[in-house]
Length: 322
Image (cartoon, rainbow, N blue to C red; front, side):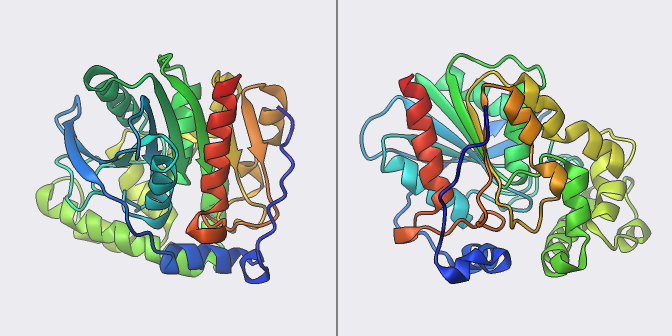
């Protein structure tokens, strides 16, 4: 589909990408959301923790929410989306990716941008154990790449899945990594690296034969982390091989259900290759909105409901009416 025109024009401070990103990530708080946790087993003897929130009215519709790098189901953008959907006739299932629910997962492997086997696991669990007629997917940053890759890489997509929305999606992982290594993003990248290395040190205690203290000490950048841990723990040659094989951009032409990508122009995490203009132009099922403003998973909105949350709700309602 052609590019969707965007009329998103937030108040002046939120037109700065960094301000929008930091405000939403640090200062935005969501209250009044009730979540109930369910643990499911994965086929490789690991586990995933799902945090459920129920609609205010009985419903046969559910939205699966996938967080970003080092996020969880309690982050503002997940909780805000869950609250928005549950107030509008959807249950929500917020997926904590492996090691992100407050408890380290069992295996040396963890989560990553292309681990769509975990999306398959959650979808199959819901189809087997729940009675929903309609399933929707929404992912943020890494989670957005994950769901779009799942939809386009050749998996069996159940008829229950009706639409998807990706917010601030690093469609080209290398392009996004290059941006995060830029000096303008040094504070973000340092924070990510700090959390990732802390978890890796916990992994080392459980799997001392898999990684050494010297190797961990040699991690200076996020790319180093992907070279030393992410790629090696998940069957890739190195970081570049991981980025190449797991970027969702190459899979977008094969997506067959209505899918919206919402990427702000002033998102400092995204390089030029993260904006799939050509792919959206050639695929009738792929919708692309590129507002001037929004930052990375920012998108300030009135009454503590973000623009991204409202756009996702409107998109899901609109496509299912056709």
